[in-house]
Length: 168
Ligand code: HEC
Image (cartoon, rainbow, N blue to C red; front, top):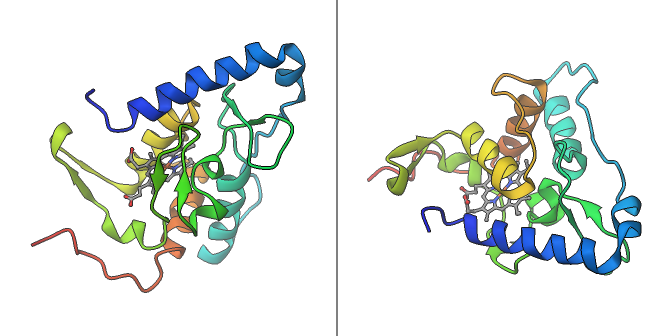
């Protein structure tokens, strides 16, 4: 109730549980252990963004939640890409079926005021929220290489977008 995101996440948890119970232990065993770690040294913001794209596509943040991508047979561990389709460049869909706008231009809308929480969300805080409530994993630290690379990637997706539109 308090959170716009709690419902699809909850619905997805039930769906994931149903999948795991329905298909037996074999389904959990076939989920690839996909933890991606940002270890490569980066020497420019473009390289950080490239690595951020890898994290976005592959990092599972220690989750045990699985989903079955369209046209796939096996379940996969959750990643950002489970909901934000095609690296966030097109409209996305949560496993519960909710439509999400593309992330192109999204970074320029931050910091964003969240009236229900009386909070101003930075892009980092939104990412933490998506890892906790969406992926159900352990979020990267605010100053971690993973966070920095994700922010670089999302900012690259917003190249040329006009900042400050959230203000009257
Ligand atoms: C289970 C589905 C799901 C996953 C997985 C997920 N997200 Fe999200 N994301 C959402 C939903 C739903 C919203 C919009 C509502 C909200 O903010 O809760 C959203 C919103 C966002 C926004 C804000 C867009 C805007 O216009 O303000 C960003 C940025 C974002 N996600 C990044 C990420 C990143 C990075 C990851 C991986 C670390 C991720 N998301 C994983 C569902 C997901």
